Length: 307
Image 1 (cartoon, rainbow, N blue to C red):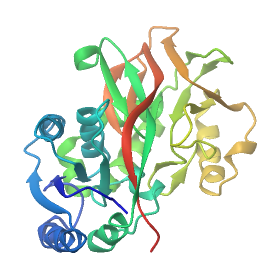
Image 2: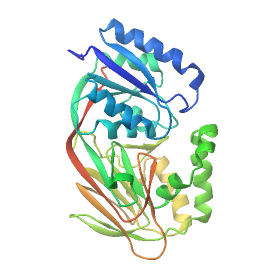
Image 3: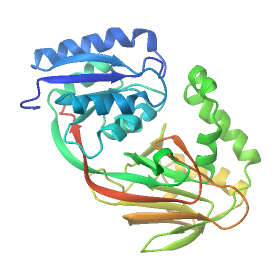
């Protein structure tokens, strides 16, 4: 149980994902469920890209006892960046296009049912990932689930925000097919203390889930102070097509010339003139070089109780 928590704010993205027109009603039902457990909440809508970071910081400054995020991966990432380093717990409710954290926590895709799980939740202090790059505003950005560079970074940087708003996750699939035809799969260097590879793709995972139905870093854990690193080394377009089928079948750890290992710091550097793009939690962070590192004891997460 969330003992001692009586005052919380729900920060939600009113434009994220489908069903946005009934989300307010569902959130009000969630408020009623939380109130029955003794937790009073206020609803606070985001106002545009970046607003959730400042809203989360304001919640900390105002002495809120818990912050509940309702939105997609981008909204959650912004709230994480507003809470990182504080002691204010973060809970999540389902929303958005593809919510990796909701899947990782096995929450139902129904806001009131998820709220019932939250009131029986427990608090756990976890590490976060941190991306360092001169192309990021302020030079750094935290992430909670997954980062990457290569074709996924290019895809995330290329998706049109208006198309994403209209089509949801279909926008990513359409852009993915376009990149599969056009992307040259340039190699770049992935360096850690444990291994070094020339890669065409790197996934730096804190979660087993990657996006949609896909799971890549299946031995990653939010409760370990490390990443699981996945590297693909092929530059052959047809290999990416065939490897995708193995990935969807859960057989990707058997693919030749792909590598998995755990580390606390990963540096990605370009080796040629081709630009290589990166992303964190499905949000663009620009081009390589970039360094990903673990920051222990960085966030308090609410783990939902049993159904």
